[in-house]
Image (cartoon, rainbow, N blue to C red; front, side, top):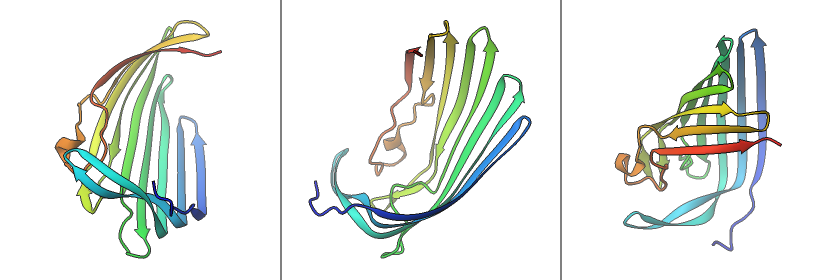
Length: 193
């Protein structure tokens, strides 16, 4: 731990809009945040794949960005959702980009109601380039798919396949300080009470 860590204090301004016309819905937000004592972490040491971090403060930080997206009902029962985030971050003392914050991220998925209680989803999550411990990290994309069957008013069962391409971040760069779970098959029983 770090006994000298200070709480964050932030001032933000955000402008948000939503628009819908028939089958198309658009959304967008512009935001600007100034943070005093932004809580972050600093890499202390690396031993093989093990890393040791210490929580720390960035004296003055600035985060400016755009979030935008759409939902389009292509035909009744088939929806396409996409959301994009663009970030520009700065440590105002060093004039460097804040670490571990991707400059671009994009998520998109297609949902289909197949009738008879069956639904399916396929989509991807793109994480853009970022800097970590002074090293530029490459972008990566994860693909996911699922099928859901509503059994009755209370229960549904879902079968999902996450990270279909089995993306391993350490294979992309040894500087990644985290891992995405490898290809994973899951089954979920959900109760809505």
